[in-house]
Amino acid sequence: MLRRTMVSLIAYSVFAGCSEGKGPTDPAAGVSGNWRLQTVNGVSLPFTMSGNGAVKTELTGEVITLIAPSGVNCVTTFRVTDGAKISTESVPDAGSYTIDGSTVRIKWTSDGSVTTVTVTGDTMTDADSEDGLTFVYRRE
Image (cartoon, rainbow, N blue to C red; front, side):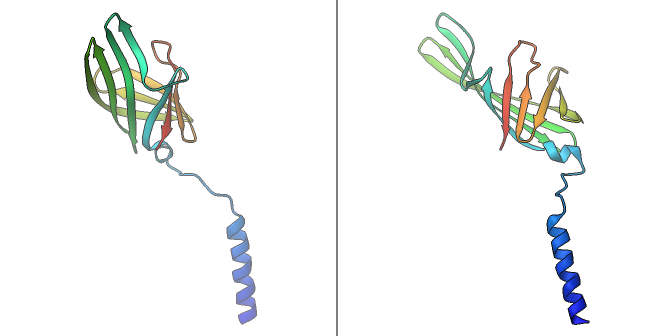
């Protein structure tokens, strides 16, 4: 009897160890987390958004937090240089999201606009921005 129990335990351990890992069954759990902006058009931050003469606006950071099952918070930070005066600004936003495969659609509360991103592992890419820029985020 003891021998049969030991054989069963060994067999169970082998099969349990060889079973494939399953991802989360809830797609929202698979994209949840903090996503920090890494590059804009392949260029590391800060990214110059506009500049004419003595005034320059730079995107210095952005963190998008996807909260399962459908909540979004975002904070975008900028640095504005106006001659010798330098100031920083943080712009918060919120919204909701839906998932379709690897595509996440974020609807922003501030203006009702929709951002469509693609999630692959710990990389989130917004290649469909209205101004032709590509934003790449990494999950923290």
